[in-house]
Length: 403
Image (cartoon, rainbow, N blue to C red; front, side):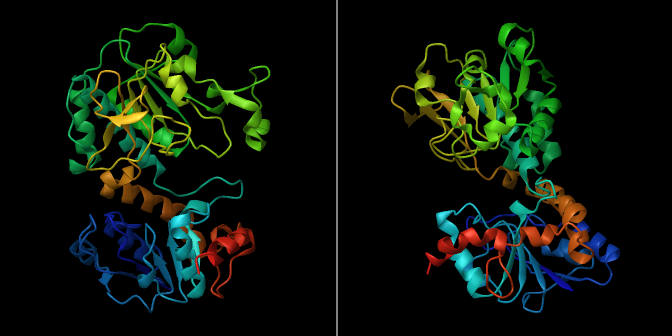
């Protein structure tokens, strides 16, 4: 099998890679029967010379490769027919902007394996950049709070050489006593955010204490699904019922919004689930949150202050609760919103290495060897015959509509 790492072609440029130079070298030792090459790129955080120094061949034309690995969507004119591709296609949720990509994949008889649907037999995702979204997003939230209230200034994450430098910036943070951060979600993103708060030395407290007590230091609490959703009829919660049909549920987040200073959404939100807070909720006199670091970044949805994504270059905007419009985030009553939707790109080296470790642990062994749980098969949206797999047959009208 010959494997190629492609050059990222999507704009804006993405500096991440699926495998670092040292990871490529380790793979060559672990799987000597695999031929591994890398397409040259001027934009990667890892330079071409770093791959060459590890003995990895640089090869412009990858048409002799069997399997190709990238990160973001591949431009249509860069797709090589009759090959197996691994990348984030952003098609399985019927995203309108990528229907033409899926159409091209089918027309070119490409087997598309989407990282986002690579799961174990229990349905748990095996690979992703979520951890670094949480790590960087929490840092951005801390930075935003300092700028909003004139307390301290931190270097933007993307201007730091790596995670070590970014975390060294946290020594500048001085939070007033009883500053309260609330997080929602315990997945990869939520655990990544916890890592940054741990580096800051912030104390975790129980939900009950968070709501009722005053502290002589900054604290945070982290909420699971049952902590911010409740049954409309009796205030209860049943996990199976909620995930099967959340229509009978409503948000229970407002008590936290009345005491928290910073909110960090790290959850997965499904269509039909209750909004965590609405535009009307923000208008209430009891509302206290001044910074929303929306790591989940669902636009104009469950977190009402997130009215658009922001960018790495300009990560913060203000939301005015009364006009429901964007304003200067330093305005007196504005909520400062950080809603960067490509957070791992701010630390491309660290994020790439973390992703590569997951790829090596969970995906490559079953790609290069036995796959008893059919991990690769279940994540394949298309076949080399130019058809959708049965699991993804629901995408047929979506793809046909792009003709």
